[in-house]
Image (cartoon, rainbow, N blue to C red; front, top):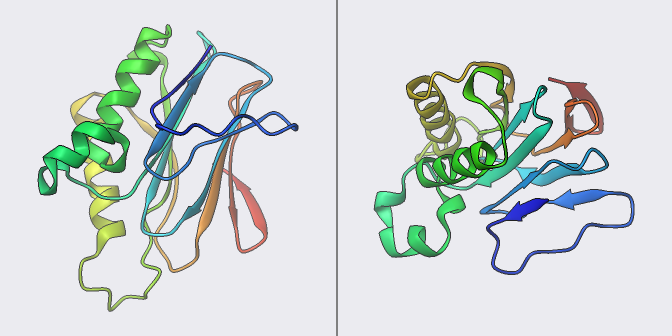
Length: 173
């Protein structure tokens, strides 16, 4: 079973990857799946995995708060950290995951324009993720955030390994 909120979902590519687009999420229980999202600059990617229920999910959010455009948030909740994480958690719990077993890993939330970026979107995205996870009593198990380089985040469902690719190098969170 795979759940997506993207209105134009892209099918899995032949190597088993399920691509999570910008403002999208996917949840799966299939051990053959690898969830992956690309181009995490100021956007934030959050991967959840329950190693007991073997349920995982991945989201790619652009902005921290849905209140800047409630009508857009209604159509694309995953565009925003606050509404997107809520939707992902609901879907992951509905698929059998439990809060006490959930492992959370975060990547992205950078400043592609450098330290002088006025709006500090990446920093605000990461702050909002941390706040929501703290309120939900979900521990963050690993992060790769900040800086100016874009990242790719992937979650391998067969074993829960979460990999970040940044500037040609891979790091396990």
